[in-house]
Image (cartoon, rainbow, N blue to C red; front, side, top):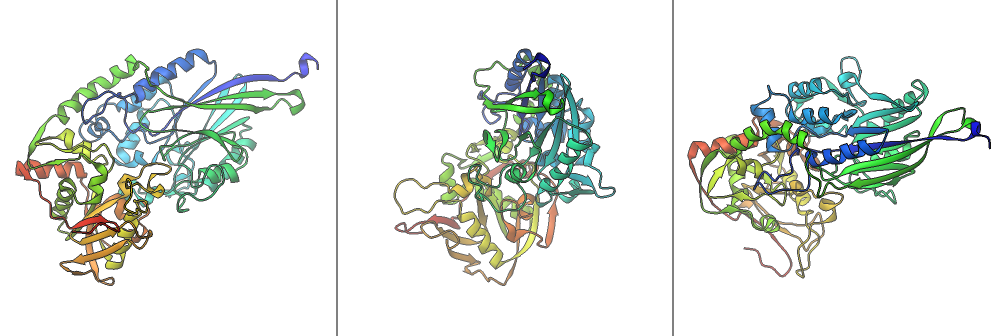
Length: 538
């Protein structure tokens, strides 16, 4: 073979962050303890990769601007200042970002402010304007040239957002199927744009088992990663997110990356690109080597820390503001125990929801296993450490049958238990990621769940005002807006009449409730519990 017919090669290093959720600094906001995660630590890795690789493409895959007290404080109390998450990505020279579902949480004005401050494009092909059908923000994809190779990056977002987000935050937008949109745009990128390499950055996860293709969740369209790999020809690399999983493998012949959440990992794929004279000079992917790189032990990037510092100081001052005093004990010492029998923290949140809304029935969740509960002297830090989402409240009208169906859904949180060993979370609520936030606990009704019984047959007692709940009766229930829209596979709540909408974040409602009273009391009425064969209920 002569030199003129030998293949030329280029290596392209693709770096992905996803689901940062406002985690810039390597700290826990509940207790100031250090962590080995966060964008400041990833920044050190990113700069190192740039030094050692000639061609680097850096993408953020969504859910960037919401998730920590720092992000909350900026959005609610300091939004006139430059967004610290955007400033960090600008500093690191990101090539593009993808709209995530949580980008809409604080409303369109804050989202547009964030995108306007960005020195990189925000991509989303399948969220379009209802008025003209054009892609939201006007950028479905971006084109980059590396050593003569034309690389296209297409952005996609889970279209399931209208099932969670407040209507006013997404007014005027239409959410299209991600697979159908990918088919259209990948074809266009290959043919009209003559892209050599097509990378799809999708803020969504996988609806099927990565190896055997068996369904792992209801086929709602929330996660379509497997279908993208299987059904859309022409994708050279798929960047994913949303599910907070750690993935670096090949699915249906397509290399896939998903780098966890909160800056725990950096996704990396090295594409060896080859051009052959026999192929008419077009480039193709010869090999892909992918991995997830941990920032454990990395020194946080000084410049990112400096950018975050003024926002962080304001946030820490706000977090340490005293709110009120607790008489009794609302500490969370055993998260599983909180979910097996009513806990004073859960009863308190439910009762606040009922009092503020006027609804006689309420549900809420312990969102994760690091929620600390409330100490004697309560600060804003304690509020946002326990209520970590910017949820608002809605009162919806449902039937008794809907309530029972919701309790059966929530009872599926537990693996079937025979009284021996530890009680475990079922795979339906733990795989591919923990879904503690989808286990609801109720006030205003009395109920028992028997987890020795099969899933779907676990509600053994259900009373309202001391009498069996009427399946055909109508009841007003207050819950967060995510659940009221059917989020978390609670389809029985979808499209139910909204009796009352309270458009204030729950963290603010809880803080105001405590401040107005000065002192709150820990109470426990024990209106529900989880039982099993061999364990007598109360």
